[in-house]
Length: 147
Image (cartoon, rainbow, N blue to C red):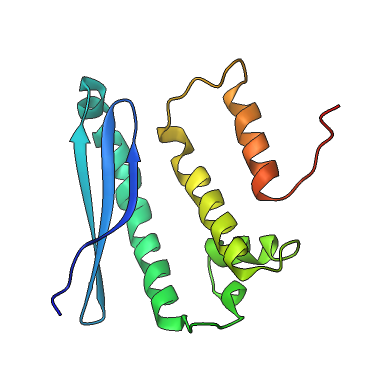
């Protein structure tokens, strides 16, 4: 079967839409970044953002390659993988025993950490910091009294 591109991450913002696609062929992983400038600021901001993207992408690819190499369906050792993602899984695993939930919370936390500065949103009277702190509380299962 021929290799096909798979959407790994898609993120619209108010000024551009970005999609990261991956393809695996012959044990090699390729990453493609596809952008659509939705507004003029996208043309202006992406050159600076692309420098960050180019610095992060190789590490993300190495992490993905390591994950592909060490993944065994049903294996309990997910938290033993190296890197930030593994440390995050390990931390979340201290309060959550469901491996699927650990993986989902880890992915969401990683996406917030990497992508929060790309989002432009009205937080309904809350500051960005307050919303990020609450997101962290939810992802890391930190309980707060609402009373």
